[in-house]
Image 1 (cartoon, rainbow, N blue to C red):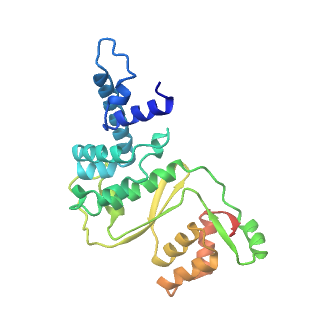
Image 2: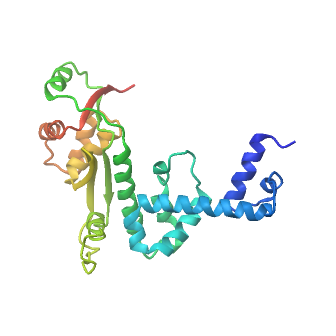
Image 3: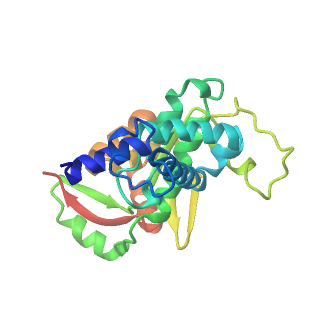
Length: 258
């Protein structure tokens, strides 16, 4: 007798187009052949997951057109199907997939646009977390030993790209004049993405601020993060950087490194 786990594996293989035999043996045909029933279900799964990816990566879809996007999504779904039930959580590895997808080699900026859109999706669904009041932070900092790291707003993401992905994203919004063009050689960008209220926003940071905030986001102590920033920008001012973090409501706590 087939176990539940074996049946689940068989259905998974069938839905991903890797062979129907195991799942078909457990299907009651009732006027419609088992392979046909599985094909209907498989079509529904792929259609649903492709729509979920389109909702998360609308600019990528617009850049490559819907037919190409559907083709790329099909390849991606077969290779990396969802591991959880929440559709908005699906697609974290899609940017990396596009970066290595041979059909995208002529559009090298598409993967970074996808990285920006994933960061925006992540920010939108990040759990709310209140910022520490400046006075409280000063009290805690006065007792710091140097081993502490700042905990930042969980919606925060930092995206660096050699392409002007911010301009590409803005030029591909529905309300923008379709004749607008973007100079791909314009500049590299270091972007900060976060949620503000009910909106997700992004902005360009200078190299020092970006390096500092990325190091903090990676869990590095303030001193180490400052060193990273000063390595790319000799004019980096730690005091100003800390004040900016507090004023922008990005610091949610202190965490001692283990």
